Every structure is written in C-alpha cells, then in structure tokens.
Length: 195
Length: 214
Image (cartoon, rainbow over all chains, first blue to last red; front, top):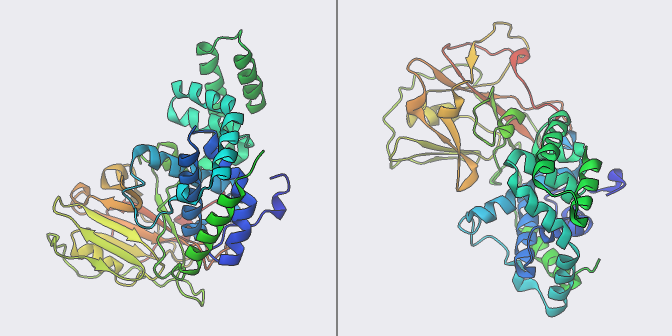
C-alpha cells in the first residue's frame, strides 16, 4: 500500500481485475479477520467483498481516492449488510460461498491471522460504545491503519470532518476506557496516531 | 502473516470466471446508488440533502454522452400507478408498488423515455440535461428530499420514490450531471435529484453541483 501509483485500479476486465485481486487480497482478508473470529465467515466475507468490487468496478473514480479507500468503503458496506442479515437474501444465488473454497491449510492460515488480530478486534469492540459516524472513521484509522484522508474517502466525507470525528471519538473513549491497562496504552497510542 | 494460498487461488479463479461472464458495462450491469457527501454523513437519512447523486456506468461503447430529454416536458398525465406495470429498459427499471411507492434503479446512461416512464406510474418527473448556454436560474429545493426518496433497505442499488410526498404542483427534477470531461467520461455518470415548482425550458450547467472530489 505504500506506493499508490503502483496499485491497480478495480476493473471489470478479467485480467485487470485479477491483478487488482492479487494486490488487495491481504488487505481485504485483514479487514475481515479484524472483525470476525470465524475463519469460515472470513472466507465468505472476503469472497463477497471481492465479488461486489468486481460488480461495482465501474463505479470507481480515481478522483475520489485511491483504490484501497474505495475497497474499504465496499468492505464496510458488505460487512454491514451481512450483519443486518440482508446480504444472503440479496442475490443469494449469485454470491460465492467462500468457505467452500477452503482447505484445511487455509483454515489454519486464516485462524492464524484471526489470532494475530485479537487486539485489533478488541479495539474495534470497545468502539462499539461510540455512535456509528465516530466508530466508522475510528475503526478505519485505528483498527485498519488507514490515513485519515483515505478513511474519509472510504466513508465519503471530507478529511476535515474525519479529523473532527476522530477527535470526538478520542475524547469519548478516554471517558470510558481505563487508562491503566496495557491494552488501553495501545489504544491511546493508536488514537494519538489518528489525531 | 500467513496466507491461505489455496483459498486465494480458488477465489481468484472463481472471480475470473465471474468477470468473464459479466454483462457489458453500461448495458445490464447493476450499480449501487450513491449519495452526496452530505447524504452519506447523515447515514442515508437524506435529512441534510441538497441533492441526491447516483453514479452509474455510462452506456454505449462509443462513449457518447447520454441524450436524455433536454427540458421538454411531456404532456403525460400522472396516472394512479398500475401495480401490474414494470417499465424496464437496458438503462433503467421503474417498478410501481401497491403502497404507492415506486422502485427506481438506474443501470445505464440512455435515459430516453425515463421521464414518461416515471410519470406513467405517478411520479411527476422532469428529466433534463444541464446546458452551458442556459442562464435562467431554476429554483430547486432538496430540503424535503428525505420524504420523497429513500434507499431500498434490502438492496441499496434501488431507490424508493414516494410520489405522494411530492407537493402538488412540484416536480421531481432529475439532472444528468455526468462530467463530460472527467477522467472516466465513458464509465461514470451522475444524476442530481431535487424538487422544483417550475417547469423550466432548460437548466443552467452552472447551477449544478457536479460530482466533485471528495
């Protein structure tokens, strides 16, 4: 993600999308393993996110941000739809059952990622106390490591608005999170980075 | 960080197969309506809307800009909305429902007939293309768009119009504001939506918001 000019944009062209997919696979899998502790669900969500990205590739506009910001926006929508229970009803036949593509080594590899992301999931869990607008931008910055501008673009808001929300989120969390634990120290480090 | 290589390969192959079978962009591809920054900021509540914007692929391999109606208002009376009617073209789908609402999905950029389609199911619509040579301001109002338009909770690609919420004498104004000189003039179009009490002969390009850089 460090050299944005080398990042392939999403495209409906099969060859171009294959490049995009290979470049963004770790990004998407990381996004979902920071939010679920099920390897099978992570596989389903990863498949859903990439399929949605393929279907909506023509909606990508380079003027509105880097491909990764666009992809994070799609990822958030797919997860939100999933947790609302609507994604399976919608286009149920068209979706890819990602978990059917897993073998035992895949499950182990994803579970390894899930274990490694435990602290990030805990961080995201603590954000649940925040309102959705604050939580959304804080998750993308503090949990997923996006720059504020990228997070803003993923959410369709201005960078200034994102910074204001981060500031408010930080203030709100400082009131509810104990300051003495190792975890809260980590939280504060992340929040400082986000501010 | 370990990578599930088998899964990555299998999913990549599955996606490649799906990509091969995708319909040509701008003909039958589905797209998700988006809303302006202010709309997104309100969680799709549309409360703070000035305009609603829908992005969708532009149709036509030639990349020629769409040619929706240029301001003329068809003398089509608003009907009661037959529940048996479904008006579908390669570029849009208009579906009336028993409760008086109308589902509306844009797919491509050829909007000929869209105005009549919407009017035939009870939506007093004006479909226009802004013109640079038009200098007569048009009074528009989006403060009540929240009650007129919402997203289908089961499918965010579909907008739900509420014709009964449109005040008598007002029209739902749909403007083709595709950036003709944009980076992807053939791939992305946009639609601004607002209410108006007027029946303008043209709409000034200078009055549109366009789809700016977020």
